[in-house]
Length: 249
Length: 249
DNA sequence: GTAAACAAAATTTTCGAAAATATGCAAGCT
DNA sequence: AGCTTGCATATTTTCGAAAATTTTGTTTAC
Image (cartoon, rainbow over all chains, first blue to last red):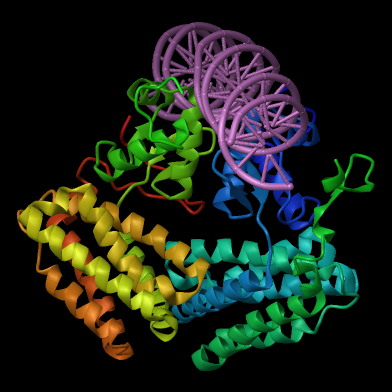
């Protein structure tokens, strides 16, 4: 390894994959933006092959779309897509949670309570600006995963994970236009309690509402960005951190 | 294009992808088998990069598993996986069909009836040995797709498609050990009729049974192949989902 | 003025070798 | 013997250039 700093045990492609994912979720690479190899090679300082590898993974995650022999683009966003995504997530998440509540053991309950505690502590520590933090995303994601982790269906969990990651992109998008997070701590606590209490009806209703309301919240705060007329997406930051419009290039 | 015969408008990687998929589904490349670049390069007569591209796609389809920096293997099979797959398929297929029946229009009905007709004609033409035929797979797949195509959820359809393809591998596997297909034409016809009649309760029950019975049929006829003692096709995974007991070398 | 045809440029796809990493094996040590 | 260490081999990962393809721009014919 001649590289200055590469995460241990990871390939170069894996590293680029990770960085590109952050850039897409963080809208440094905006929705619908075309991904040219030349430009990407400069930005990430790797070869064509390595880029292609990373792009293939992103295509699998549906954060990037492959256009036959005409290159790649960042997956577009739309209110329709968000609504569809939300509906499918509700279906999958409800089923996973239902099964987890039937099959979860003590260790499962302990993991939920433990992760919730970590989440609470994190909130106390960083106040109400946590939503920009990658660490918060990780903890929040871990909490929701812990709820369904006992569902004993690898396939369901995998599908869920992918949908969750895509939804994360929308959440992050709207968080830039908000000064305050809505009161989700209360929701999370209620969810945790009903799940551990194995109150199936209530728990499923809560998780359903939780997902849908988050989605509505995104549309409320960032929906204006989704309109085709708004070209705010095609913003691209150059190396100096300045924002330049890609179209003019 | 200097190649002798490559499908029009397709890249070389796309062609290899298609061939490898057939080989995996057809068990020319057996479950759990390690995929070495050297050997694959000889078999498919393409370069490393092209192979890697095709493999990435297969990983996305979950027909191949990537093992960090230790290469690729054909996705293992197991009864547990088939059962899990079946459960998730039932969940997704039911929801997709439910929505399609609520939103489908005349064109949707026409497509179902038309595809069913093509399926019947094909059966009449080739008799009871069709199950080995790729053409049958295509028509059969088209019929099931037509049922849910009006569900108006791209995400649900995409998930469904992927699960269907994976299940196809199991079906093909068992079809090698059967001289006669069970009476699915009757089932297909009943499904078509209740769906077009918008009899939601009955249609959902029929599709549910159809999927589960096909799965049970696979286990009955090919389940012996899944046994751990046999050929090492069943590989165990540790917590990280990584295959631990490599058998084939 | 519009469309078709061609050439030039831009971009992606493919290649095989070189670098990096993992695996297997033998020697040395406890 | 059992376990680690070091080296040779096998395999994957990465590279940059060459080939193939798509896009763009210009000219010509109708």
